[in-house]
Image (cartoon, rainbow, N blue to C red; front, side):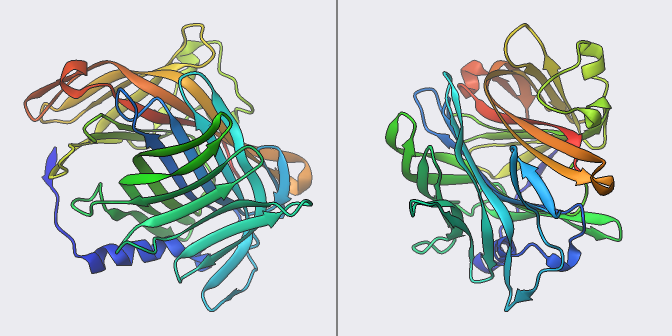
Length: 385
């Protein structure tokens, strides 16, 4: 169904942004993880693609863990937080991709992170040659509300600023989820459609890029679980998203592989189905209660995905997410006294929308009416105990 978007004041927005700078240590448990991350869609000839970049600062509870096969200390649940300043073990990660290749490991740097209620998270480490590597995100200095970021690694560096128009709940920071129970919960702040611009030192050389981006800070106090998630943009800024946490045999998966049986790969039980369509003007958002994202294997290096969403009022969207790149991040942690390890990974697929069809509030949706859509699709597997 379609809902009007309520207006909020700058003070309302600021209260949400302030939540970015805490991970609520009193809620954390041995399964906790926290993530601050951007996915960037630079403007190109066909729309917001095919280039994409991802940068994140992330932490995971545990004495000794491995992130992308890098040994590091995990988040210490017994740490002290003095004056609201939270210091903990974290890792900064970044990659760059286009329709020819994905360059993983632009940034892959463990460090001690410092999260401050003054409006920043920093996670820098100094190498033997004095080079500083890691990342930071902070409140923008020259805007009423916005974010500045700097990431640097062995293979690249990025400095950029991101901001939203604050006209609706997609262009504004929102408290997307806040649950806290005896068995765990989740606190999620999302800024789903931001503008960005900045300077990027990439494997093929320096570039000045601008476009649209997505930002999220999530504190998950539950085991890392399987999900499928999409965020995509059209040339006019219209956004599409779908999210399906699920149960299935993929909870036992280790490494980057798939079942030989298409039927087995699709044998999943959705815990929740949700999706949204937000027009470029952002005055109304269509939300869908039914969503499917199913992998398709055609002999290529990576699967494509069939996507269908609908509601009970005649609104529907369907397309093929045709993959042209893949990045992977994964976490291993010893359990049962070191007898075995839990493993969880999320695969990120860069995709273009093909065979788009649908109906939104009486308007027919296709490639001709919308232009070329590009997006990112996460297919997370394993179980992070």
